[in-house]
Image (cartoon, rainbow, N blue to C red; front, side):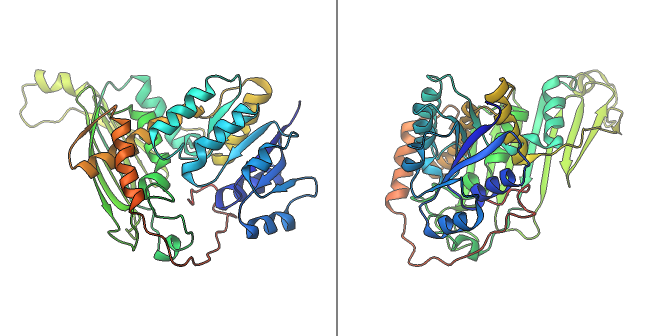
Length: 390
């Protein structure tokens, strides 16, 4: 095998972006074998767009019955990600899961357990891990040269969405259809990155405001406080209601401050460890000396294309993935913990009670309203695919 024959379940906004990348030759070791979508309008698009040799199916089950494939990419609404990843693996297909891994950690844990039974490649579409800025932050923090983390702050409020966006799908912004709001739809990458770079906190206290800025039932404004095992603290702030928004990620360590903003990374490097300096200096107000240093990166930011290329390399030659599928549970753990904390109005320890979370989520789902109408809205993937447009 010199090419991976890929089937894509779901050819909406994200799935069609993957289709276009493959057809444009951006992932030369993957060829499109089949697609499936429940919506007639998307199948019509496929008939008008795809080569004749690409099979078009209505249901995921029909696609999974198609034998002339090597791998499956699942790009459908969140609740069904684990279901069809597990089914693909059981049928002998390698699997790539779009973010998030699922809606609640219990179902994702089951997916990970199923994946462990199969000698197949299982990946997560964490395309932001390909960004040279975040890769450099991961390298600097995990490398240890700057000591332990003291504080983490990420304000990520440039996810502005209008009411038209939320009206564009019957499943959008509902507990029963989507399972959450900004945390589950816009922020899976940020939650994955914050734990990938800084590690998993031991506890979370969050305030998730539901329908604060839009006529929706899920959260569109979140402030969360994090506590880490070593005593470090963090704040995570996000919303879809700010215009203009901000994307600023700061990590304070014992010997440096790392700042990521405006697609740039800056590092202020201290001459001495602040913790040692604090208890040895005789000065009462003098700060430890330091300077801003230049940080070099390789400038590469392949996004979804990079994840798919690595997926093909893992299948064909055993090369490493950008993110293993089993890692999808980590960021979702943060999301679930934030939701649970807000619902219970108290801090939540990690790991948390997964059965309690599911019980509380199901209460939300039972009261979820049905949309009386859905307005059509066109999403252009051209020119926006590299910047997440979920």
